[in-house]
Image 1 (cartoon, rainbow, N blue to C red):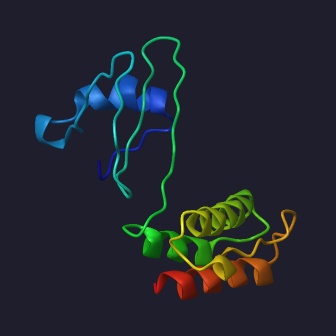
Image 2 (image 1 turned 90 degrees about the horizontal axis):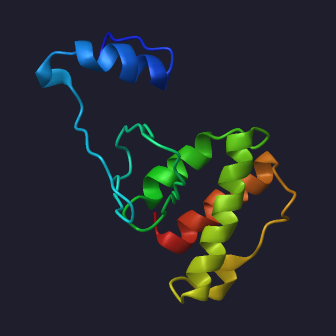
Length: 134
């Protein structure tokens, strides 16, 4: 919430959450074994495990959020960890879409797996835009 400073999830869940007025409290739920939850792109969320837990998460890129992903990739510093992750995601996206027949095979040209340069990132974004019409 606006104006609330919490230095860690522990501080937020332990100290801040209970002090918020009801109208400012976030939605909460408890998932049981075998249950799943879909969190839409752009929704702020936090997870607090109540017991030892194995969690499997997946970020999805499709037609509904491709423009937002491209914008984030344009802003990523290719030399940073997020830049390397963006370049890897770009390669996987291009390969997967071509494999499913969503885009022409030539749109799935692979980047050098070790490449993280500005030119490689710019090329990946350009090809994604061309192939997706974004």
